[in-house]
Structures are given as structure tokens and as C-alpha cells.
Image (cartoon, rainbow, N blue to C red; front, side):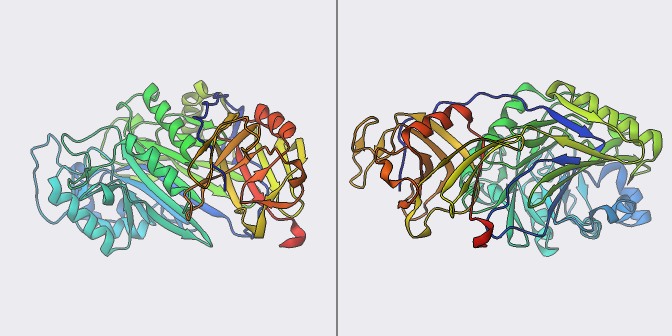
Length: 485
């Protein structure tokens, strides 16, 4: 196995051109070994607050009342995520906060029947009832088999992902907030919520074990249509770390969609269920992200709230909400095209990825469906090169190497097996702790053979060409030819 010790340079951040048709997001992806016939559907909504002005409505009409017009939308989804902007408890608690959003314990049945199987807790209201209120919430969610993430009795519990299995794929959902309840950042022996800076290293670890990582972020300023610059930076860092999708909430209004390195960031979904009276806070959208064997699609469904009930509007109102998403997304070069009778937003981004065929021992770089570069490679002995989808995590010229005796061999040395260049992918050998990568070789007789210890080897000439063509964040698909499936 190979390991690079030279600090990698940080790649540029070119914005991909994006198209959104009201509303479908299409990226061509190659099929790797054990290609899935089944799709994975992830849906998310914004803030859900089932207290204060909504309490009398729920007591009168039942706890499924707010969701009575949207339950069917979630029926076929694998993952349905909502941000729980309150605590659930039978106790009337007061932690001395200005707000005290306590939902009845019966409200969890409404959430369950509505289709939510993941609730995120990293927000500024989960501790309105103090630690007791948070623990009551976690307890009742567990009892009703609703996964959660973002808050807990200590850092380990708070940062632990909610995990949903779809077919043979595992999706991890983690949550964070930039709006920390005073003194309540989770620590080793202290209850609290997860801050944004905790998540980047956590995502890098989770990428080893899970196929897709979804991040839910509670951030921004209330009633503003644009995300904060710092939140944009955080979102980009989360994608760079390995997140597949980032969804945001807290502003109570709609904010825009960005496609960053081929992956969606929804900065604010708006309020799904809340008691804010103004029109802008009663408009939101449901996000639907579908992962298929050969493509990914992002859809949004406009939502308006009337008398505490979320519903899909018709005609001009739906178009009006879609236009607000379009306007909010303008700064991210996200282009939208509307169809009057079909509310799917189609997003098409420049898609650059590397495909490595272990059977043919060949690497190909694709850009917008076209093969831009291709060459013969060496792969791992005894089938030890891992299959799957990865991203380029770092890259460097003249990499140093740590040999089996833990001695550093400098770049350029004939004893350094990494050759001229190194591109590390976000996958580590759990036995050795070393990173898998794509790199050059000083022994080109190895090319075209099963001769490496797990890495993918190119001639020094070809690795130098490839390094100039890609950025960190580029997807890498390692597969076997169809004839070998």
C-alpha cells in the first residue's frame, strides 16, 4: 500500500454550469460492480416546530393534522429528513430561554405516520427544555424507531450518524448547527449539539463505512434570502470532505440551490411546519434527491402552509414559489427552466469523473460524456484494489513515501514507488491505516498487470497529464467490465 506525506495543494473551485427545469437533476455516472437496479430516494424538509401556536390545532385536530396533505409524497422514499425545531416531552420544562418550544409526546406519532424516519436535532431549540427535554426527545424517538443525529448526552452520541439502509447501500445522515445554545456544545462528558467544525473530520471517517453521506445544517440569519459567506464556505468544506448532499434550514424562508463539484447544496428549505404568520415564512419546498445507477436527479416540490397544514399549491402559486427558488439561486449560476404543468427542476452539471476498469486495467477520464484521456494502468494483486465510488481527496507532485519501516523516502528517489505524482482517494486500508491512491511508477513494466499493493499505477508521463486535468473532488469509479459481473 502507498501513502503520500507531502501536504496536498488545495484545488480551485470552478463553478459548474447548472440547469434546473422546474424540477430534475441529471448526472451521468458509470455503473460499477454489483450495479444497482434499485434507486435510492432521499427527501428532506426544513424546520418542523410542533409547539406554541400550533399546540391548540394539534389538540383539536390530532397530531397528523399538519401532514395530512403531504404524507403520500414521502411514501416511496428511502430517507425522509426533517429538522425538529422543538423538544418532545411530557414535562413542562423551562431552561430559562426566551422561547420554550415543547411538543406533546403524542406529536411523535404524527411525525412517524407522516413518513419521517430521520429527525435532526442540531438546532437552537432542542435544549429549550434543558438537558432533560433533550433526553426525553431522544428517548421517545428511539421508542418510535425514528433515527436522529445532531444532539446527545455527549459528543459521541451527538455526532453519531443516523443510518438508513436502502438495498445494499448505507446512507449516513449527520447534523450540525452554527447557532449554538449557550454553553451547549457537545463535549466528551457534556451534553450538547454538534458544531459545524466538528463535522468535517467526522465525514472523512464515515466515508470509509457508508456509501452516501447527507449533512443537515442549521445556519444563517432569519428572514434573509441569501446564505452567509461563512455558511457557503462550510458547505463547500463538507462536500470536499465527502458529503453527497447538504441541506440547510433556520432562516424560515427559502434560500437558493448551489451545485458544487456536482453535488447539491440547498441553503434553506424554509419552514415546513411552523407558526410564523408572514407569507414568506409560510412558503417552502420539499427536496427529493434520487440516486440511480447511471444518474442522479434533484427535484423540488413547492409547499405552502395554511392553517398549520403543509400542502402542495397549484398553478400560479406553485410557479411563484419556484420563481423564488430560481431568484435565490441566481448568484450560484444555477439556471432554471420551467414547464407549466410539470414541477420538476432539472439540474444538469458539467460532469467530470475518472473510471478505472480493473478487468481491462484501464483508466479513462470523462468530461461531459466524452472520453478526454485514457491509458493503461496497473491494479492491485489478488484483487485488492477496492471497488466503488470515491473522490480525489488530495494531489501532489514529487510525493514522499513512508516505507514499511516507517522511513520517509523523498520524492524523486528511485526507491520511491509513487513516481512523479500522487492523487489520494477518500478510502483507507483499515488494516494498515494507509490511503489508497492513483500514482506514477518508476517501473513501467508493471503497467497493464495486477502488480500493485492496492493502488492504481500509471506511467509517470500519464500521471502528470492526468494531474493537470482534474481537481480535488473529482469522482473516481472503480469497476469491473460488464463481462465480469
